Image (cartoon, rainbow, N blue to C red; front, top):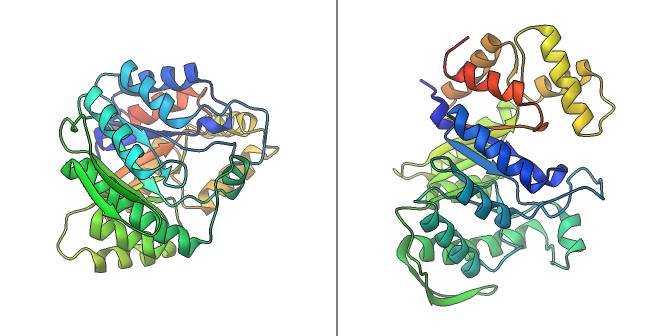
Length: 311
């Protein structure tokens, strides 16, 4: 049975949140009983808007570590092209130790070319990014799991200890919707996170993932949007609020239709739970619900109530 402790909230601060909003939302998420809070690691808004706040990920994670006590938190996901992998591992171990073992380290190969170019980072083709990711993951996993890396590759090298040592195991997550990343997660990660996908796409990725497991136990999680309301009127109101926050001209009906077309959990609490239940039956064990209008605390509270079985 799905528990609220196996669920979390995903924030997109690059879309205009302030640091204070990130921290206050995390505190609310913790008070409501969720187990996890993730935030994106983007350097620019991902809808091509400019001139809005986009607080840097790892700086804000330090604030979250200091502002919460039980909530597990992390990036979803950190592109390895932004930071040297040995440095990233040390950052992760430092936060994990400081927070009492709560950091979740989710890494990926990156996808948003504009933010790479804007900040002077190279953005090679996917095949090369995968080769870089493979090497980076070797460095990161050695440092966070074993405390030392001795590695020389074509892109990265590291010969160092990782101190402070992590306070307990760091949960290492690989996020991605490609077959190579799904297979790599099965072989080397503690958790595979897939962004919301149509059922047929997820089934193909899950088959690749399952075939590569070789007896390992790896958690499967999903990140994606949702829309929840007690009745059609509230549902439309929440859809309108989300469109306004995202500066979208979509009508509530258009917003809801697009979400349903993507197989997102949408509707009343009962409809929401039915959709999530089907996803659980398909092998998804954890859910990180994307809150695209963080000011909508009423929907966040309804989500918590729904997951606790109070509706």
